[in-house]
Length: 574
Image: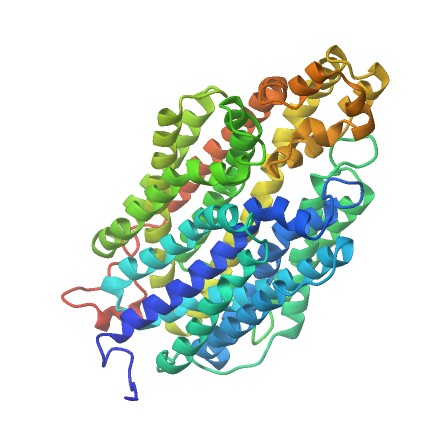
């Protein structure tokens, strides 16, 4: 095989790097969401009721464990790529990811043991994904000259974002056939990607620079971020008589301890010779503005997928005749306009940002996102689908116009030696913001539900034959249980009313309570209130992200790359 001496000696190398890293990123993001729709099939397959007392741990960690682990490790693995070789660390990620995907398919246990096994394997899958995500962007930035990076990073970034929505469809299609297929599908692609990367990807000259591992920085950062994310995760769980756990001693302790370790981390990184977190990069205005706007954009949209899924599965689809068991797959299909918008806008905005810079397109994308959230807020709960689809398309176009130029702007602002760590820092902020966003969206939703749902639920059940004592008890169940039931595609009333009580009801009342309309009609008003608050939050986050994006200044490329740009000179930040 021809030896590649420099990355630009062969014009096809950059396209090989783009194709391989895009495969890696889309695999990682598909698996981050593929479980969301397939969770009912997984829990049925391992014979575990996720809504039973004590089982919410498995439900939450199957959903968020992958994202939390990849968020915590991506900066460290990006730094390792800077030190020992980005391609080497990327290849290791492919191997770990593929092995973990295979191990996820061979579960022989049932019940809580099987659920715990899946959670642990998902954590290892997240480790592999962190290696891939931390180094793929740096590999692309090394391979492409500055005047083409927007296109390359745009395609790669769009593949990552769209993978999150493609995962919803695949989970809905494969889960009912056999839940193991949602993990097995990654194995052949993982093997092919591993071999392809090993033989074809080459290290960039000068990218690997050695150094020492910052063990104290890694430890304090990991402890701080994990504790904060665990606190957020359990903050939306009920505690005692409270609908949420934000005031529980455990959650408060986790958040306070996490904040303490993050402060220790920040102080230590300011003085150590070989820091994990390259704090000096924040002196680069284009980098800081890009990372901040990326963080705010992820906060605005991170919980959007969950809200749209619950909206569709719990209310709109049943109201339009779909059985609860069919709603998970149909929700993924009805959200396809969002994916289409991202796929259309991403590459186009990347090409345009190569010529004109990131600021106008990234800023415009966040203004467009704010407009889409305003339109969603004005949309009635029982909407007309074509109007909903157009708003989703606008949201997707806006996300695509923001994400690709912003990523290119961030990576162009970095020195070559810091691309792994700098790109990893950006990814960590983005992934962490998604977890934070989920906590915020669910909190606002639960506040809205808790105000009116208990009385409505108890009254509605009592009117259809459920004894008053039992109806009142069900009415005081935590709203998050209702949300999770709808999210999982279960018939919520059948999950909430004890089977022995449901069996004593008349056939007429059984049909009404388990029918398409009772639960959506019951929850619509409460859901609308909470959803409106969540959308208002997303509107403000999007507008602040637009301001942060505009503050990056004019087109900026780090000065060491000027020689690579044909017929161009470096443009300074203004």
